Length: 388
Image 1 (cartoon, rainbow, N blue to C red):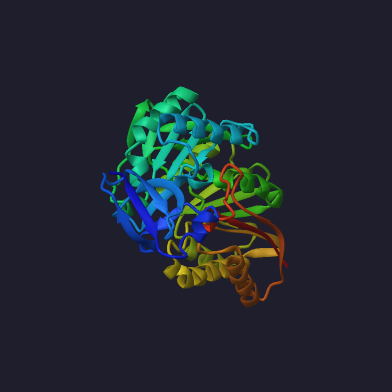
Image 2 (tube, rainbow, N blue to C red):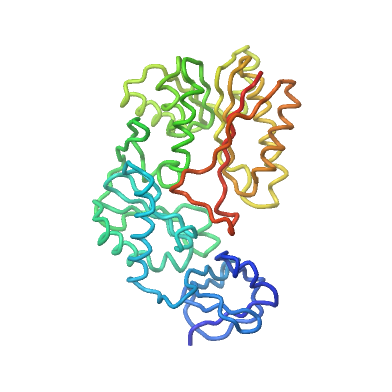
């Protein structure tokens, strides 16, 4: 007998507003019996049907709703939604490197699919989706005929779903390094060992935007990872210093610089916080400093410490920017909201004694659409600042 989840009184408001997640503490009772990861119906306290989704008794997110009307779960549904998700990207994106599926924003909660030319990389971030990965792979093959699909499974959220951390081939063949082109820059992407699915596609447009701020200048790129910002900046900068604590990432930066014939990029293996302090002691200054750190907070309880971290690193960066130069500062945590991030940067500006002007505020690329009724899907902030 399929599961039916009845919510506590009043808990249906967020779901009726379009949010997909039903938390375990919002459930009043669960009727029926089925396998964990099976389809469950969700109803309000008065019995009104709210939708259906896969249930996971091990997770704080009990159900992720993705069926709200008369549609039935199955291969036909996935074929339809995967095709629709890709078509939406193709209207906006000219190249073959983009996020094809962005979970809740495409009515496929917990499913991520990134396209790197002829290859796809997939993440299954819930029990229900993970149990259907072979069927999803079949759908992707039928629709897009990729040469291979690689399954990445190291995200910490999988453990919260009771899933192992493991990666491997789903179908076809995928090389260790995939060549792509972004904003006219050639990149070698390690889809098997690189962070996330190999590359941070959500910053594509922000990386292009940084070029005008880098033109003719001396650029410092902190937390550079595989060099997306560094290479875009190097297209017009006099010199770029790429800093990362990972020697593996810096090897990738050097490889990507060579692919494009850039000789104006130097790498430094160091903790970014310490590197900024060292540059200050040495009297170094830059025309553009780029801060694109990993998320400083992954839960609401960590926001206070994260704000202090963002304040400290932005204060250090502001002290290194030449008069009239620029700072591009980013946050990729949805818990660090834009208003809070702006207040934190303002605190750093006051402490720096510099006059700081905001020139642009940007968010994640349009292949990572955010649902206005699900704040978790809006996470990336990028502030372009001028430091006088």
